Length: 368
Image 1: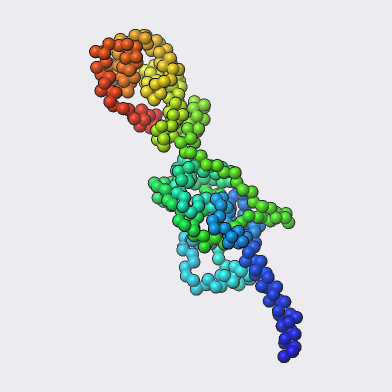
Image 2: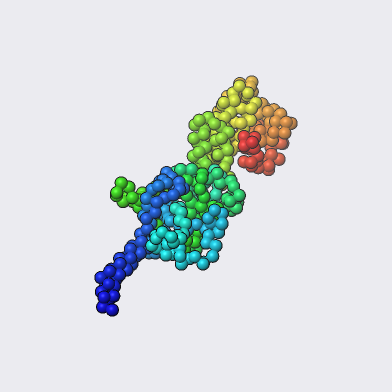
């Protein structure tokens, strides 16, 4: 009996103590060799990572852009876990890492949406959080096409992230999925935070991405300016139109839309009537633009019209009215009135003023 006690004291107890220490350390810090390319370019297949649980347990809510290890809700298209019969075995396998014991599958994803936030997809802008675009170029390698059965419900309306849940996505979104396919991920599925990777026998902290939010209307306007500088007039008009669709009172985009039409008209100088119609749109959108009015006057002179003569402007207006081009007729009538035309000759103007041409009507041809 004494011999058994000695064996327990000198051999078995130290082994059990060492195993307990090992399991305790492994519970809070687990090594993982990445087996997929879901997080490229930031993490590559074969990278050795450290998953730490302490941050997960200490934080009521993890910050946005945190890289997390998690048990996915679906594995090979099947709900995981199917039942709780093997949960104890998986727990022991996760804890000890011993061969022969099953382990939960683990995948790495990045937190994008936090509890209470509204998440929506836009085919061109990408992800909107509380109606603001998130600029993800700092860390993603490929954006979603977004137009799929999995994301169609989030294209129509925003969805709110539930309490104790997250919206997660991979960095490589061309080949891998996340919450857009799974739905929001419950915090209980997270197994830890990935903050470090092992590189050349040293531990390197993962950098925090520099990410900003943008107002979508500003993004569309800025993209429109880039297209305008490249003389891609139709593309610029479409982008300014989208910006104004989000905020009809966004004066910068309205001014830029007028400039786009004016510049587009200049490129059509060989077809004066087409250029004239484009300038009419520019003036209607921004009546205060002196440069556009000067361009219109110059074009009328090329067309053998006197831009300072009210009668010539009224003749043009009547011609457009007969052709069913009411916006063009309205602009010419309005210019004639500014030049002091007789009220009796402006009989067609009152009806056109009540028409209130919308941006949809104005930009319809260029948006086709």
